[in-house]
Image (tube, one colour):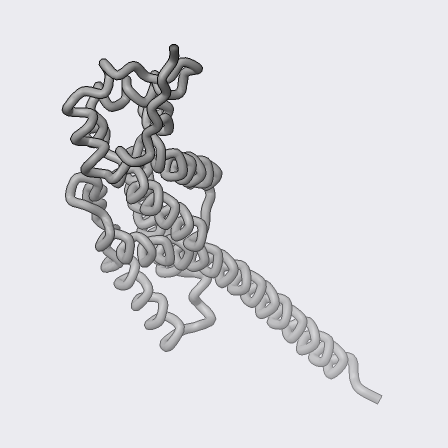
Length: 243
């Protein structure tokens, strides 16, 4: 039968093992919590960098006038330096990682770097959104009176409506890609229908032609006739004589 001293020693050993186990469990829980925090920030950075990749590809398709101002991304130098300190601590004294300031410094700098990238993306998208093509509905209403142009007007309106459905709030990289594709399609359609291509006498002629009585011969000026000939539209006119 163990003596009292031996029983005390056994109990002391068990208590010591219990304390050490509890301390290890606490360190593991703290470490798991910190890993989760870093994983969250890393996820934010990955999503932001995915958008940066899309914007870089799109930048080659933007004209000089619609290029968004350059938004410099945050330098990862400080976060990288802090990460090295964490690595060194893990190599030399992993059990003391929760006690020093190395991890807290790394977490703060990593978060700052990620926030900087996110803000740069937000600024770039805002600039691109502000530079999106504008559709002049009043101009489209005039142009759609011209034969052979009504289909192009419908196409512009369809692309405009599709573009309006894409929002840049809380989006992922795929949504940014869709936004830029819709924007480019609308830009191409709008640019293909320049206002200077339609002189006012031409618009007035076709506006009158859509009325019940049609357009008078006085509106078929030399300028209008030349415009019609150039676009092979003169043969589509019909003359109606009224007694």
